[in-house]
Each structure stands twice: as C-alpha cells, then as structure tokens.
Length: 574
Image 1 (cartoon, rainbow, N blue to C red):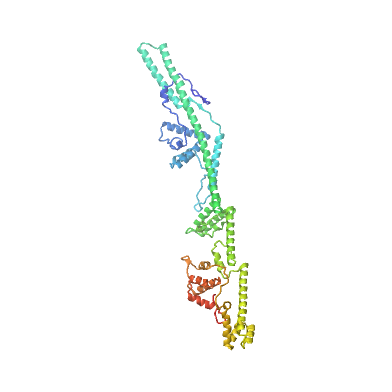
Image 2 (spheres, rainbow, N blue to C red; image 1 turned 30 degrees about the vertical axis):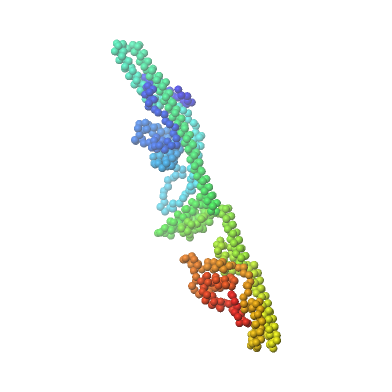
C-alpha cells in the first residue's frame, strides 16, 4: 500500500460488486514516464498532434477531459499556454511543422500574442515600424515573468484518488462481477451434478468466491490503480515545475536579447564613434521607406506631400535624440540618405575628432616651418604642398624675416660689389686724363654709366679698367661675369616641387598627371617653378619634368629675366 498525503475516496460497497483478477486488470494500464523537453515536441495528446476524429476511444476521452479542464481550471489553462509556447519554440528550433500546435494554442486555449489587435489595413497608409524590437522583447519577457508570478502564488493542489471516478477501477469491478457470475454458475452446476440442492454449503461456497474476488480488487487492484494515479500526479507536478523553469529561461532569453543588442550597439559606437539608439534606427528606416515611396514613378504631388509630412514626424524624433536630421531632409534622395552614417557622437568619437584636428594643425605647422608660407589646416595633407606652392599664399613671420634678410644680403652684396668694382676701375684709370671725369660720373650716375662714358672717351683706358676688374675672381662674381657658390638654399627640394605641381594638373579620366597643351598654362607652370626659387639648374629639371621643352624655357627666360647692363654681360640663372 503506498503512502500519500492526499485524500482517497473509497468506493461504495455493493454486494454484487467484486474485483477482477489482478493480472487481468494490471494489463490495462502502464505508468507514464515523466515528460522532458525532448518529449514535448512529439505529436500526441497535449502537443497539438492529437486528432479527435481519428483518435481511438481512450484518446477521445483524454481530449474531452483535457478540454473540460481547460474551461474550468484557469491555472491549468495558464500552464497549458506556457507549455504550448515551449513546444512551438522547440519544434521551430528543430525545423518541424508547428501548425497543429499553433491551432491548439489559439483555438483550444484561446491564446492571443501580447499586443496583438485586429487592424484594418489602409491602402494609402505607409507600412512603417510601430514598435522597436527591444521594447517587444522586454514586454514579452515581463509577460512571462508575470505568468511565473501567478503560478508561484497559486495554491498547491493535493493528491486525491476517487475509485468511483476511475474508469479502470469500474472496468475491474465489471471483470470481477463476470468472474463471480461464472464461478457461481460452475459451483451451482457441480452441486446439482452431485445432487446437492440449495443449501448452506451452496451459499457459503458462493460467498467465499465473491469475497475472494472482492478482496482481490480491494487489496491488489485498487492499490495498483492508486499507485498509478499518484505517479501520474507526480508526473504532472514535475511537468509543471519544468514548465515553470522553461518560462524563466524563456523570459531571461528575451531580456538577455535586449542586453545583447544594447551591448552590440555600444561596441559599434566605440568602434565608429557614433552611437545610434534602436529608436533612432527605427525612425531612419521609416524615413527611407517613405522616401522610396515618394520617389516611385507615378506618385502625385499630394501623395508626396503626405509622405513628406509623415517623414517630418520621424525627423523630429531624430532631433529629440540629438541626431542631426538634415542628412534625411526632404531634399535628399533615398540613395544619398542611405549612405549617411547617422548617430550621436560618442566620447570616443569626440576624442578621435580632437586628435585629428590636432594632427592636422601639427602637420600645417610643420609645413609652415619648412616653407615659411601660411597654410590652412586640412585633413588631406597633400594639399599643404599645393597651398605652399601658390604664389599668393602669404608668408609667415619667419618667412617674412627670411625674405627680408635675403633681400638685405643682396643689397649689401650689390653695394660691396659696386664699391669694389669702382675701386678697381678707378685705380686702373688713375693715370689717364679721364680719371677725374670717371670719378665724377661714378659718383653722380653709378659705375655702369662711368664705364660706358669711359669706353666712348678712351678705349684704352676702358680696356684697362675692365681688365683690372676681370683679373679678380671675386669682382667677376659680384658683377655677374662668372659663377660663385650661391647662397645656401633651405626650401622645398626639386622632387617636392614637382609632386606639388603635378597634383594641380590631374586628368580626371586617368587620375594621373597630364602635361597641359595650351600655351597659357605652360607659361603658368614656368612661373610657378620659378616662384619656388630652386637652385640654378634644378628649376630647369623640374620644368622639363613637367613637359616644357628647352626652347620654351629659353624663350621664357628671355621674357622674364632682364640682363644686367654696364659690362654688356647678361646675368646668369633665374
């Protein structure tokens, strides 16, 4: 006999109710295993796979009892809804059909998904997101937690067994009655055969047979059926507990999905410097869909205005989230708007922007130090060379000082050169009758004029003066009659100048440098190269590399370089 804490309802004793043999009754029922998650996907009673029309009598009885319990027990109905949802989820994971389970969930249990409502489609309405995924996940997770709370607060049912309501027990009684009837008939026939009529012996024999069958039902069959009922009760309790755990796991899955999506967006924001909330993504997707419809062929101006008004609402949402909606304005087409990387600038992104600005400023300062030109900071560092090569670019303070010093050195050198040449020429004509006139002309009009007048007055004295000047190498250098070491050059080298100039004449088709063909542009190239002030010889190399011919360079030299007068020799270099 099993021990339980439940209530057992004993059957009413009737004289004609006897039990069937134990072996015959036990063959009718087999204990059910405790359901697991894997068995929840097997078609059958409670899994949505049972069919009343095609099921056997036992299946029909179970279906009827199950539906009656759904209508009378709200707690059982909630458990069935939770279990059906779990079954559907497991079958979907395994790629199995869920139509029967869905029918059981919605038709038999009357389940409606959270937030589901009947809507009348509007043919002119725009299908835009009405709720974001994160809010749906959170709502579903909270709904499942509410179900768990209701289950946890529900009063625990106790085990009870009523043999009168057990069809198996009633079948055992019928079998026992049949055995008693058969035994009584056999006993009566045997006594008649022996000539014994109804007597105490006959009555005792029949009573003994009835007591034996009834005792068997009471001591063997009923405990077995009670044990089986208790096992079914324990299986149901275990199933409820498992369903309770499944609800918890499912709710955590929904809530955890929200956290995972949020974490992904935060990680993306750290990488890109832009954080886009899910509500912002929903609004952007809605705007893009509205733009696509507004740009569809055949749409009227009124329809386009209506769509634009709807998009204004989403643009206002972006503005509330501190997201610039100008990239999704009504004047921007859908394809252009789709390429925009919208979002809220993160602290990491702001730091990255600041670092880029500081790097651009540092690069500009480096170019200004190297070239003495004022350049504007920009993200494309190759543009600094183009800015520095522009002749209209102003000089920095350092560049102005350097230009002034170079100019001053040139003036000083010219003055010393003139003084030295004058002394040489004066000494050469000191014995000539034109000595006084030469000094007067040099003092009043300069050395060149004095030499020119001397050549007209006394050719011999002029040749002596020129010979004295040419005999000294330094004098020849000051007068430009020879070559000396130039002043140290510290600007851009020839390769840098060439790269800077070639970047200004890029063919948009080939994206490479193409030598200009028109004369005005080629003359402009000559002027640009000359403006860099490269050492003598290097400027010609850059001009040739830019595509100018030697003849063109010589013609431009004649045009822009004025020969010095006085000695009749042209100045060398540019």
